[in-house]
Length: 571
Image (cartoon, rainbow, N blue to C red; front, side, top):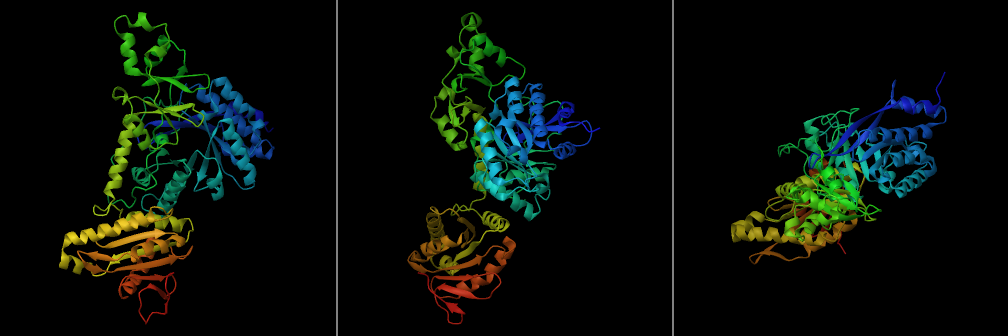
């Protein structure tokens, strides 16, 4: 006889798999994974779907995951899984989950609902409304199965997403498969634009880990770090080893979208009511896995005071400390909190700490949401290390003369645009007769000329959304941009009268207009640009030529040469 849906959840156990920060190696959350006594959770949900009780079972499993996590007594954020059709349900149907949170003392914002496939058959507008209702209730939303499931791209762009989870099959080819690199990089770019966190799922090898770090992925989970276990790992005692980055010949490099943010370093905060006594605080700090500090919050969980572990224990354990402080408000030994918004950058946090009292520059910084509520804390030492590592990696990729990145940055941008089906323009700019410049007026004058070109390009691109610049060595510059911005860039360079120590100099610009689907890789783009550059060099004075994949036609937009198929001027 087939069991009713209500008979299932109580027989299901839950294993927990950590999510790790690739910045500091700490566990930042755990995912609850349903483990039925027989078969798989997919079998369970399929049976419930046949009975017309899928949503009821899905929510019941999420509620039981909360109860199972409560037995582990963890402060870590909890990820629980929901199918897309469940997430589109009215909020009233989530009463069992909300009741589980109330009974265990959890808040909705401590739970990330991982919305996963199938999305087929789920009306997108209904799903978006459901997600917004869940967010308004306090939950955070993750999109699961990206890269393997049937996740609509428009959903990724418009959903109120806190986290995007890159499926294990999407990273299998890292670091050598160009398509895997392009997919991962495009999602790094998307998550950065949407202020979402990208999690790589199913990381199994050190090579994958190195590639993910270099691409700017900040969170990961997988068997390389920890298996899913019924006993949850402790955030205080278990951390991920953080090996040195891979050798520089690795084809994956640091993404310009990967500047560190506060949310990348967040830890759970230990909160107590604002009127907690010193004895209550001491008990928390003295526990085996005691935190580095305590936040005293009001009834709305807004931080009022911050207690530093070392300063507090020094006060209460000193001569007469217990007698003086034990039964009195701990706020007497606290400081006003350093607070920062969860969407802030790591550099903004360092600015905050720099402006603080010198005696408190090492204090934890309390992270708050848009309502001013405490959502966690960050350690300044980890922020400093993360920013330093990012700056070192970024500096290593820059040309020392112009401070522009090399060809790898342009290559990644080209491959990203190809992978996402965008139309774009790639351009190759160089100085005509640059060797003669160096031979005539000297290397110093040549260097000044290249710096001037770099500054002009950077200044022209500063107000544009889509431009990527690169100085690939010598007098060669590369740039990638949208079609509507190439003319302004070209005119900024070509309208400038260039000279080196009074010696007149001309420049050549070769551009390749790539419609969506017209090219397959950066390597192909580079091959097609080479003959265009020769055409540009053959044009007198500063020149600009334009070509397109699949045709030998070359348009001369600046300069003149009569044997070209067509000539026209730029307005």
